[in-house]
Length: 312
Image 1 (cartoon, helix red, strand yellow):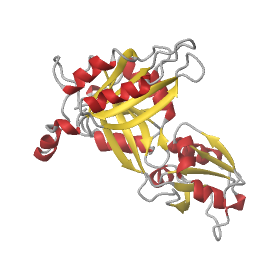
Image 2 (cartoon, one colour; image 1 turned 180 degrees about the horizontal axis):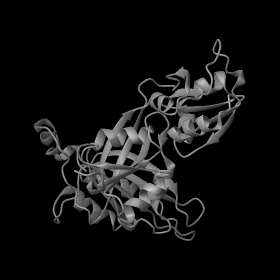
Image 3 (cartoon, helix red, strand yellow; image 1 turned 45 degrees about the horizontal axis):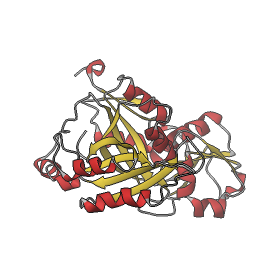
Image 4 (tube, one colour; image 1 turned 90 degrees about the vertical axis):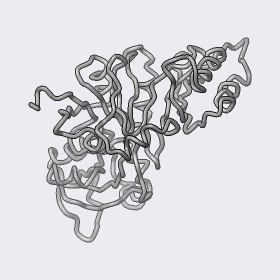
């Protein structure tokens, strides 16, 4: 298959980012063409406008929690990404390294005055940063691999990046410290995006994978909703009513997140993930839960797809 004829997959770049690794783990380079993007929103935009077949974005980290940039894009306050659905997920082990221009003598970090990384990385390396680099000024950038690229381009011996060992090799940086994240089992979960009209198809799989995919209980659903609220009618207990819907239909919630609604101060959008999948027809526990939820919350719950690790 020629490169130009391969379906394109957008990911948060540049190359050697953890999102790039998740994309490589999910989409084989012999069947797909990988398209690095500058920001997470660029990935959403590429999927929305149909210029790519799929997109891969970071969703949450096991140490530092949800990626709020991604949550805000799902919230879609300006109705830019109405056709986005989730169709898969992938997990990547994250081992952060400190990368710089010149090797350090006797682990003397005092000469490092500037630090570059993605905002998520700061929260994953708090102990190391507090002990060795609390004097350094921090600069937020779009990805950890972009941080390594910027340090390499700067040629500044006082600059360093928190990034991956792979990025250090790619951009020819010195490995100043390895495995600096607080938790050794640190992982990030990534979601695979598609447009609504793009068919969801099985990825190439072994018989074992096919057997797992047939297990309905392993599927997840992501949705978001807001609650009706006015100062004169605060609607006490509305959130508890919404959450009780899932228990009533024996659906196991796996995560709950909130973000500001963008409509009024101290009003929130609720993001819910749960085990189960929405059926094409009217039957099933998930369909029944959606119907009941629509009578309690605003907008009836925005549905973002059924997904599982080997289904894209």
